Image 1 (tube, one colour):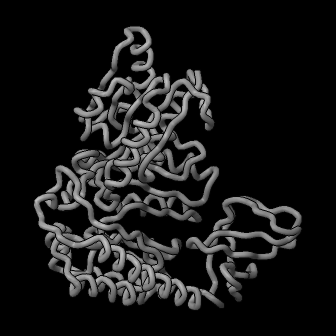
Image 2 (image 1 turned 120 degrees about the vertical axis):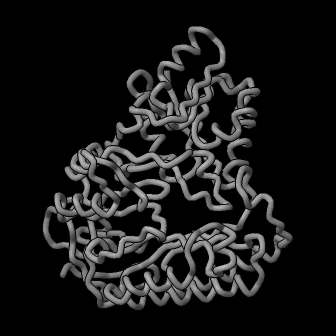
Amino acid sequence: MKFFIKTFGCQINNYDSNKLIKILKKKFFFIKNLNFEILVINTCSVREFCQKKIFFFLKKNKYFKFLNILTGCSSNIFFNIFILKNYINIILNSNSIFYLLSLIYMYYFYKCKQIIFINYFNKFKNLNFIKNNLNITIMEGCNKYCSYCIIPYTRGREIYFNILKILKDVFILSLNVKEIYFLGQNVNSYKYFLKDKLINFYLLLEISYEIFDNYKFYYITSNFKYLILNLKFYKKIENLHLPLQSSSNYILTIMNRNYKFNFYKKLVYYIKNFLPLFNFNTDIIICFPGENNKFFNKTLISIEKILFDKSYIFIYNKRSYTNSIFFFNNLKLILKKKRILKLNLKLKNNIYYINKLIINKIFFCILKNIFLLNNKLYFIYYCGRIILFIYNFKYIKINILLKLKFFKKINNYFFSNIY
C-alpha cells in the first residue's frame, strides 16, 4: 500500500511528519504523487487561515475512497467536529503517532473508526528520527499562556526531553552536517534534571559547543525573557529569531508577554555593541485589540531602530480558548492592509541598509550543497542572500566552513572571494 502525508503549519509539524514517514515506511511505500491509498493529514491551528485551509482540504477530498488519518494540533481542539465526519477514519494527537501502525491494522480488522489521545508524556516521544534532517526537538508545549496564543491548549504544558538522547542525536547529525537547529515552542526555558543536577538551555549549548567546536547551533523559537547574554554563543551564528510582537508597553501587558520594550531594546543593543553585523529576525502582530495609531507608530519606529533583517508580520485574528477572544476589536480591513504595507516598506529599507553594511566584510559560511553555475563558479546562502564565489580546485567538499569576503552586489547577488 502507498501513503501520502499532507503537512500544514510550522517546522515542528514538519518534524513530526518526518517521524510519520519513518514509522509508515516500515510497512508501506511513501509517494509524492496522487496515486495513494492512505492519506495522513498533519494539521495546525495556530492561525485561522491555516485552519480554514485544513477544512477546505478535507471537504475537497471527502468523496475519494482512501484511508483518512488526522493528526496534529487541530485534532486536540476540534475533536468533537472531526469525530462526526464519516470520511475521517483515524484520529490521533501528536503524542500518539507511534501507535499509528497498530491503529491502521485495527481499522482494517474491525472496520470502524479508530481514535487515540495521549495527553501525558510518552516514552516513545524521545526517539528522534533525524536522518537527512537538521532539526532536533528538545522540548514541546508552552507554559506562558499569552492572551492571543492557542499553543498551550493544542500542544499542552512544557515537556523537556532527555539531554543524553539530545546529545546522541547531535553526534549522529554531526557526521553529515555542520549546522543544527534546536526546535521547541520555548527553547530557552529548557531544563532537565540529571542526577539531582539542573541542566538548562545555557548548559546544553555550552556542552554541545565544547564537544562539537566547529559547528553552528541555531534555535527556534526563543522567548526573550530567558535570552542568553553570553556573547560566545553568538559569534558563530549570523542571526537570531527574537519575537517582539509589539513595541507598546500597554499592548505587551494585554498580550501577557511579561516584558517591556525598553528591556528588549537594551539587550539587543548590548549584543549589537559587541557584534555590530549580527542580524535579528522577529514576529510582529498588528491590529491587536486596543492598538491605536499611536501604539502602531511605536512598532513602526522600533523596526528602524533595532534594524530587523526579517520579520513575520501577522494580522491579529480571534482564536478560540484564548483570553483575547473577549477583547473588543473594531479595526477595519482597509486599515489592517495599510499597516502591513507600511511595515513592509520599513523592512525593505532595513534590508537595503544591511546589504550596504555587509560589503567588504568577512563572514564564515557553510557550503550545504554544491551548485555549479559555470566550471568554477559556485553559490552559497547567507541569511537568505545568494553569495557567488569562485573556487579554482577540481574538488570541493560539502559541509565545510568557508571564509568569504563580500566585495560587490549586483541585483540580488553578492560576489565574494575565499579569504
